[in-house]
Image (cartoon, rainbow, N blue to C red):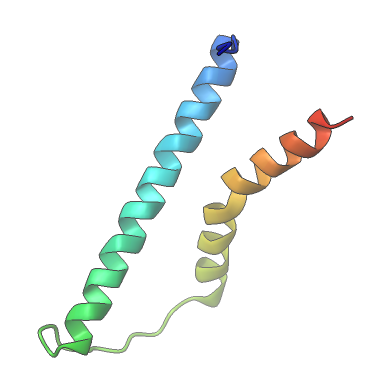
Length: 78
């Protein structure tokens, strides 16, 4: 199996993407555990107003690494 060689900047970008993905995964797990606690009555449900723009921006940021990889894969085909 041939291991590809990457430039230092590419490695930094991949490490940053991996870090961001890990943070997003941790946040998602925390949200799921909180939701499960509220469903079981262990955590009180306290509704809050949200900024729709912030929620949308978070969703966009969450999907950027995947979009970047898909874009790279599409350009590699040419």
